[in-house]
Length: 124
Image 1 (cartoon, rainbow, N blue to C red):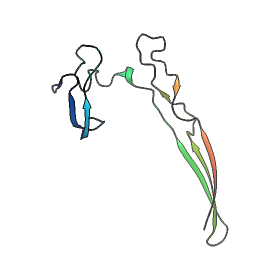
Image 2: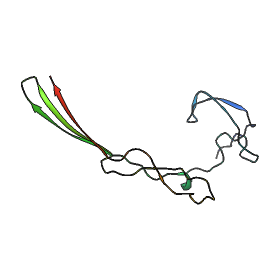
Image 3: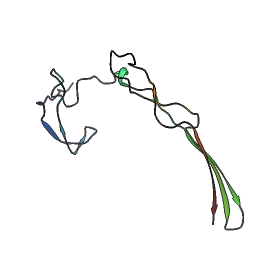
Image 4: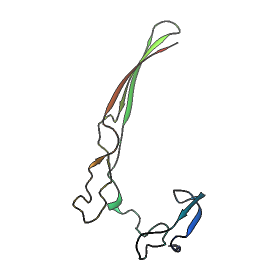
């Protein structure tokens, strides 16, 4: 197990990217109030905490096409495209304030419902 580096509040850490790897960005450390979290760069929440994960998200995209020859060098293409084919609702995590009546409730949709579009194209 590695040691955690604790820096003073309002200290600037450089040489990272937004995902925590090496990079060219700089970040200022800080936090509201007092306590052991103040000055911790990555926070003190453990890994893989189920309460911080949202529900599984999925979106299936599918298309069906038909090429229809008109002449030797000309053809007509008809396509039907489906976005979110199974109309699966995707929710985002919004109610994370512990102690409120809405805590843990997934009530905000993310993305679009099923969309079907048709396309007709002449290729020559």
